[in-house]
Image 1 (cartoon, rainbow, N blue to C red):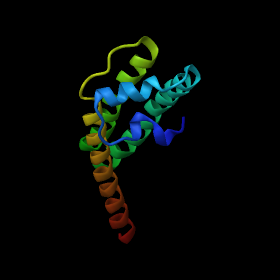
Image 2 (image 1 turned 135 degrees about the horizontal axis):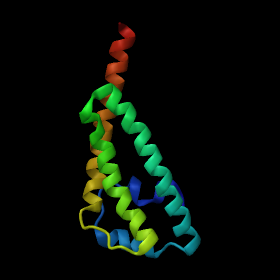
Image 3 (image 1 turned 135 degrees about the vertical axis):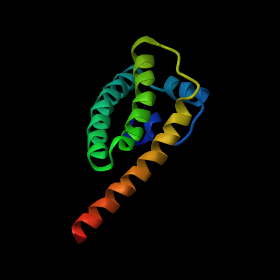
Image 4 (image 1 turned 180 degrees about the horizontal axis):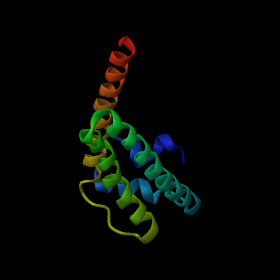
Length: 115
């Protein structure tokens, strides 16, 4: 199980595709993925704080979407909770808004450097 193969890095997927992929995981892979998801929450909070500081409240949108995606995955891996139907859509929108936010952060940095 590599981080490049998890649900978090996919742009859009259906709930059925998520279940299919999760069924292919061994017990050890599921445990690793659960740890990965907990670490992702920390990562999400970190980049969200940077986006908030640089972009203001709108900078929180990618992180909020990331948490909306990650928390149901954690609950599924821990308790077998059903995955929401919107999960893959949220993932795609998270990536789109994240790329846009990062572009604005870079733009602000370049403008700041030019002084």
